[in-house]
Length: 302
Image (cartoon, rainbow, N blue to C red):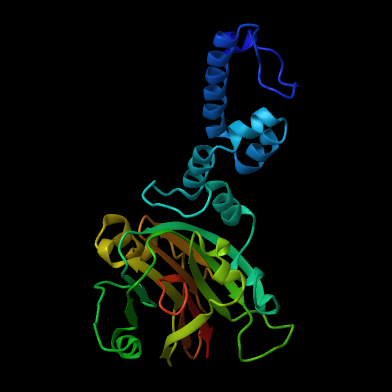
């Protein structure tokens, strides 16, 4: 490839390299464009933007949807399994520009966050739980509250399929409004990849709704939360989440930990001696009768 590139002109011009004969020029432009599309596979988002801004020709090449689709799937580490409603360049920006859900609302309650990763919903059923032990019980009661009371887990339907992004948020506990609050409330915050580009999210018409709570009034070793695609609950990667020794850390390690699988996500923070935790489950729908596009599981120390 190096010998071939030596025959081209420099890259300082405002257009692609050209030759005096129209027919061979067109063929050479296609060849050159194919090379740069391949090179783009090795560039991160910032480098792609910088390259696109060098000239109109590079802009047209780099802003192809296929370039940003590859970059998005590569950096999120998910397979190409879904249809999306927005340009991949916009999806990439919304996923990697540092945005998280508390940037748009309730900024005063937010303390810190970390990106966990991305996972995939194949089916429209999700299992939410604050327990990370086998065997997993799926109790199909009439209400979510009864499910939580019976086993500390609940089953959700009408999940929007596709790529989901998960973050671990640290927010002020709702029991106080002190600026000195150290943040005794952590939250597993998962959203569909298209959420931040949706008009209903930005205009505030889509709101989070409390769907259930689970109170544990005894000493709890760790604040845990997990979301599973029910269809893939028995997959090797999903069941690996229950092997806590591989990822939660030793009991004295109080730093939050997280794990991601193709169809699941989980977080855990080891706790010092306590009086229990209150777990809250929130969901956001795409309109009154729409699919669920975001899920929050929070743990607050009692």
